[in-house]
Image (cartoon, rainbow, N blue to C red; front, side, top):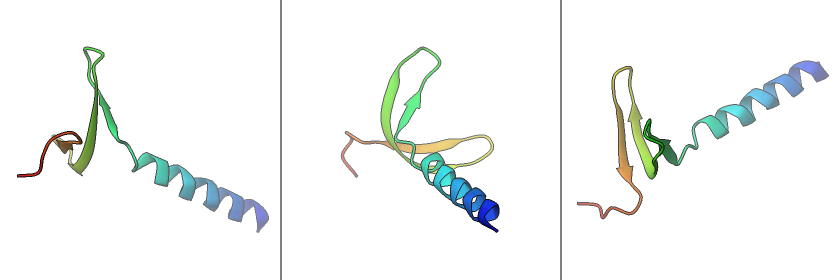
Length: 54
């Protein structure tokens, strides 16, 4: 039971960090600070953190 609890806690922590991405790393090496809105198979919707909301 201890092993299962430890494994469940590990996955919980890992999933939290996986959903907390605040940067996009582009193929040209540029790093952009963003807030990710939605992720689908073909598209990532995001908003720049420095941009004003309209």
